[in-house]
Length: 130
Image (cartoon, rainbow, N blue to C red):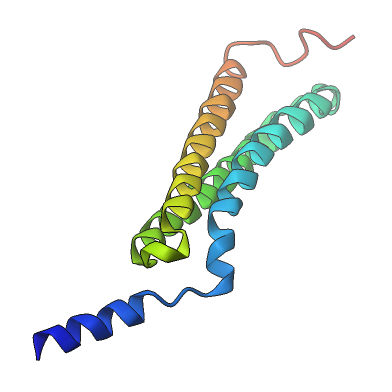
């Protein structure tokens, strides 16, 4: 009797929905995209922030970029968990590798955003703006 329940569990676990294959790609895209948006939009908004003499839009941009990185990392973690449930013939190893790379990309982007953001506390807002 226990062997039939184990077999039924394996069959249930082996089912993979199509959207689950996109989970690791979300992390691959969201982390670097968040870093690029933070760097590009942050650089472009400095003259505007200098005229307004405020920093809260930059802090908001940083919060949005960090949220994008967190969502990318969470989908990477979910993909890593799902990769354990895929039966061996269904490319579980490939999904596991993509999930791990997704987590590494999100962690790198998070570090880059943090490095850019920390400098905003010590540098003058209008130092390079003429």
